[in-house]
Image 1 (cartoon, rainbow, N blue to C red):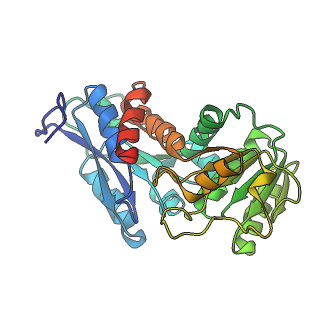
Image 2: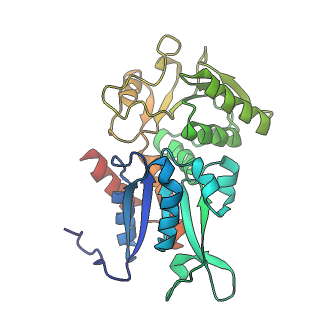
Image 3: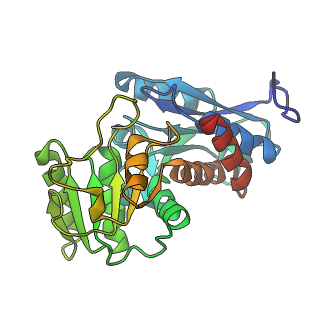
Length: 307
């Protein structure tokens, strides 16, 4: 049954979606549809499981069907760089795409978002890639952990996948102190460290666990999605007593094993709900040109995750 007040789907309804593999755990549809309804838009936001070898075809299909935009989640944020027509500065700087806006040429010949097309949409449509993850993480660290200033902070980053790479680059941009990169496969962490040192020569970066205290630990691995998963760090090499704050990018379950362990160790701790909220809110603004109703979207997230 549709939510009270939601516009009924008709021939004018437009669509947005998240593509991932897997994607059934995503809370984005609940959040985005709440925001869409609050803005009074005749849109719907869907979720599709898209295997990596079908991503280009899926993006082109959404373009052909005149979708307003897309979100991309694991494992599509890096491969999609080569599948869009243009990159926003956010995506260029971080080398990853998590949001696509479809655009058409207006009567004056310039490109604009499809939301501006009131009547028939031109056939010539382009896909523009953005990254809203990195800024969302910084906002969430400030709101959820009180870390308003990251400059000079010692940070242990767990993981070496796409999310970890974007996070490492953003932390370097923010001017953190020493950045420690720990991953089960050390060579992958070393590759990110080499990229950081090349792009940010003054950034202190080390592969492995810190011996002393750090200000923050960030989990950018997938460990914690399943109840049987171990903690995402080597307890023989690092203890949560060595940090004051822990941020787990995983948001489902609502309390991950790392979150619980951090609280037990006396740390400030948060899961990835705030990051999800802010990256989704920014995506909605990119598509609609309107200010995202963040509190409405937050309530929808909390209901979806905590229920």
